[in-house]
Length: 344
Image (tube, rainbow, N blue to C red; front, side, top):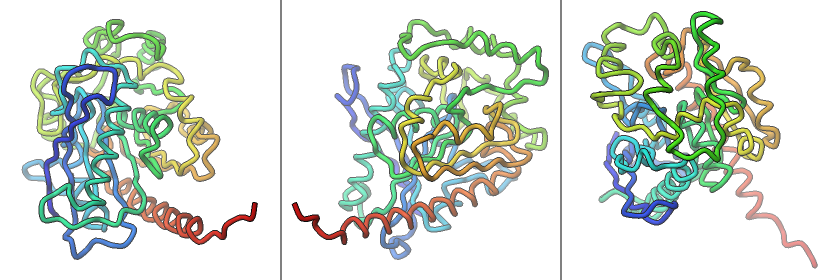
């Protein structure tokens, strides 16, 4: 597997002034393993995490890199830091609206895809015959992926992981603790100055229970949480100290419901058994215009999927789904190209 660090200039692609850059990491198979109509996955992390979430490594443990897992099975994966997150102009985090993040992320995806197609993205790596462009997102990344797909159309299919298009709720141990949800009733019109990360975090009784299942190794949980959680004072390689203030509003009912309802592309919904969709089997109904909606719920998995002992079940299903929708994409593209002209 070849790993390439990228810096994408996205200045002028949203309402913010000044130079903006997006940091990404491309995980590439050997050139001789590329295929015709190569599927490419663009992966966005959740709040408090960076693109390193897709390529985690822990001393004494193996198999925590989703990127390596996917590349070994024939996919290209590009992990991307949202604007305001990780290495992507973090100083603008407090000024962002969610639409800014979606617009800038979409520009980065389109530039990266063009560079792969042209053979100009990575020195010495050949041009890629891109088939389906697949957007996946965990938690915050899932919600942003839905907005990107509806407003900017950078993808041919999307996988929404750990985010509800109906109402994202962090599960709690008791019904009484779960009453915190009443404190999150924001609208997309609310500006960044409306939100406080510290106050919002304090309103939620517990984060360990919703984020990590009990069988996650203690040293791995400690690696994730020891620098502060969910607001980080120090960040592990897969974390981010910066977090856009607008993320607070993503726990409000129906935050991306309008965009979800407009998607016509294939949608994969991936959830743990303890996750952010209170009624997971209702989730497909949010994507009413798509004719291809899949739901997969993984046992012994909490909200942060890639830490779970059962993570590879989700990864394997994502590979199978990605190959399936890529095949459908190729067939549909060929049919369109071969269609005879209609007499007028």
